[in-house]
Image (cartoon, rainbow, N blue to C red; front, side, top):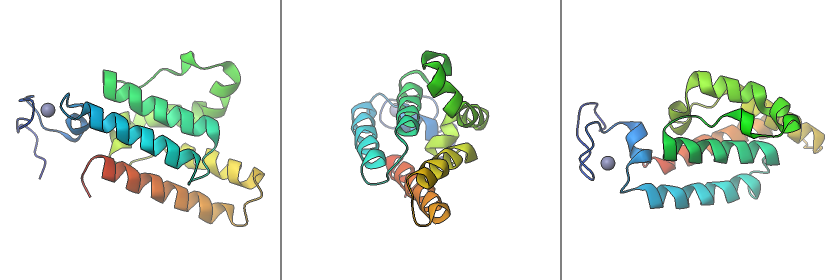
Length: 145
Ligand SMILES: [Zn+2]
C-alpha cells in the first residue's frame, strides 16, 4: 500500500513513507488531535506511569514537528535517570519505528515496575497488555490497521 518513491497524494512530498504519514502538513492537525487522545488513554485507561506517558507523548510530538527525537537533556535529572534507558533504546530503534509500533523494551520495563509498585495482581500480564494496547493505538494513528 505504501511504497517508497511514491509521491504523497495530499501534499506532493517526494516520498510517501510511514514517517510522512505522520509528518504530512495536511494531516498534522488530525495527528495532533489523535496524540492528545492517546495521551488521555495512556493516563486514564492504561494506567501508565506518569513520567513515562509524558516522555512518550513528548517524544511523539517532537518527532512529528521536527522529524527528530526529543533530547533528554530538557528533563530534570531525577526524571532523566528513570527514563534514560528507554530513551536510549528508542533513539537507537528510531522514533519513526515507534510510530510503526516498535517500542523499546525498556518502556515496558518501566511500566512493569510501576505496576508492581501499584500492587497490580498480575503485573507481567498487565505490562504485556499495556504494550499491546499502545501498539494498537499507534497502528490506528497511522491509519495502517
Ligand atoms: Zn504529504
